[in-house]
Image (cartoon, rainbow, N blue to C red):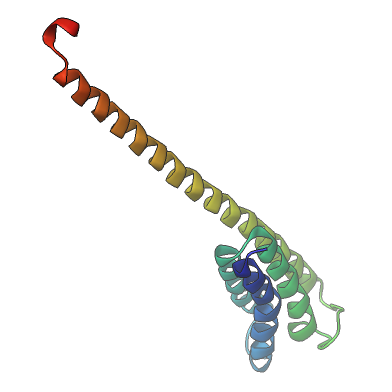
Length: 141
């Protein structure tokens, strides 16, 4: 696995933890939806910079740390409020969807770059053929 993927996987585990922990002082003043949106930004960043696996791990990590730090009862992996359960599952679903979309975008970028290179070679070949045809005597054309 390339070093970039290891870094992305590490960020997928650590970044949601750090952000959720940093949000603890704000949880009495913010709704859970707002807290989750901040975690979604983390998931999107990891998915955009890393692999599909890193994005999915970031979604799982964000959902777990949202549950642990930002839902009642705090500092436990249980959720008392039904809305927070729904919010946690939506965080997970959005994170997985964004990871797949980011992976698809990277694939399309690779295809575009490869196709552009092929097209450039075709143009170069056509130019060579055209210039060779001009040099041929008129009776061989």
